[in-house]
Image 1 (tube, rainbow, N blue to C red):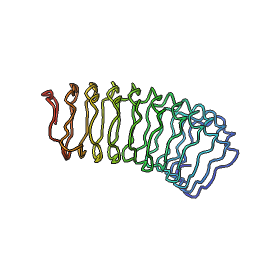
Image 2: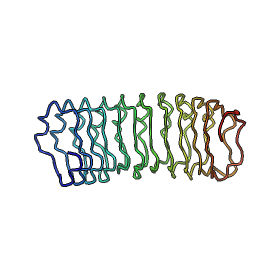
Image 3: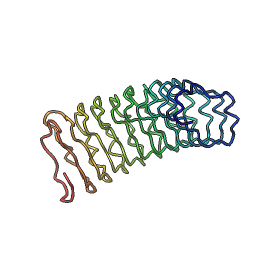
Length: 258
């Protein structure tokens, strides 16, 4: 049913499709609601609601999709929040929600114990993350670029499997928590164009797995350099272009590309 631009609703008995594994509603731009019976699709593994511009809410029954692994909510511009039952999707692995209009994520989000990829890029109404997000122990990729997030949860360092973190264009983000250095598996960090970023925590130097670091366009506080204890021996790419007020670096390995 992809790109059925005149489709406003699904049949109420869609839940009877008990063997359905993939439901593609991408581009159904006038779809306004989903029937509660959608929660009866117990075999569903992939649900694509990307570019459903008029979709205003997900039914509470969405949490009954116990086998759902992939969910696309990209550019659901009228979707302001997720139901509390969302945390029941304990087999969810990939959540793509670029350009959605969430103001917040439900506290039950921490129950998504198998989530590996969370894309919130361009969720420009998102102001913060629930502290419980640190419970996503299998999370490998987190993209929050161009959000209005002002701070990260204090215990974000508990995301022990996180390999890729994108915070580019988070213009309201000022500081990082000390636990940031506990992200021992982090390989790719993009914090470019964070014009309110004042400084990096001393624990930043503990990110020894880091090999790509982008800080171009960051302001930093007046006269503040990078932490002196940086020990980024695996770093192969460093971008500091147009970093205002940055006055000093650290002694780096000769293989690092600056």
